[in-house]
Length: 396
Image (cartoon, rainbow, N blue to C red):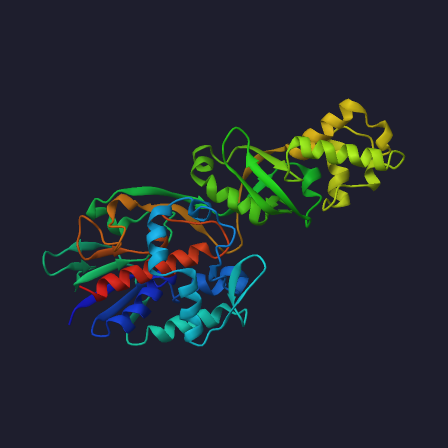
């Protein structure tokens, strides 16, 4: 009987195992997991609700969702798409619902429904918990030795590797040094942090770089979070690691250009010349934030629109469209942790995810140099790449 070892009982590993049990039940599947529970990260993702995929609506280019690994993901999604994900779980007793933000969740809003579904699909596989693999060695035509135990094929799905991949060192593969992705920003400005709890549609970028993102921006007691900040952290993950998480954040609070902001302010001045600026904030801008921005623009709190003047208008336009804050570091995003980096994609066949140098050795999920923005895209990468590997193994 052919034996397959899967290293890691996360989303990619368990989905691959579940697919193998269906596609090739004659295979003996052994899953090694260093932790005490399989799918521990899946159980807490999405605040315990499990954002299992995304509709991809509004994604103009796949690189918007996958800053690293776009080309491999394009092929993987053709093999197993987001629609396939929803059909797969629904057919196994887990109906799913689509939110307005294009994120798919189990209808129960309980991540454990996803966990239990995957574990049911893995029945018949040997799941070894508390087993941290130390070494994978080629064993000629026989396949591989996993800590001395023989297997015909090995699938590495060990997830993000902030501390590296020591069990692969003897194979001499190219590894892209892992760095954190999907994190929030620490900002030292106490005036901004005093507005904690406000959520504003905004565009945020890193001054002097091409990195920028838009979406809801959450002001926290440590700085900035929310989808816009998380997307920016993903796009700029390697740049920020190289700079020691220093730089300047630039926020456009109205998400339109200077000319459009200027026109809106002139309209307000014309319509409400005797009203105080503090009493007439732009649409969708919370009053407390508006007062903070007026103060940053150097405008007194009792100023009326008729008194704004050209210089005051210029300062206000600049503050609304490019409000800058020194970056004081990063903060971890809840319990979720994603890394950019891992096994370089140059090592693998993009159609099968098999290692070019070592036939019978496969990779799937975040262990590869593939990662995504928040919103279910990382789990979709796990399902798609896990499926590609299972399909390849079932045909050999």
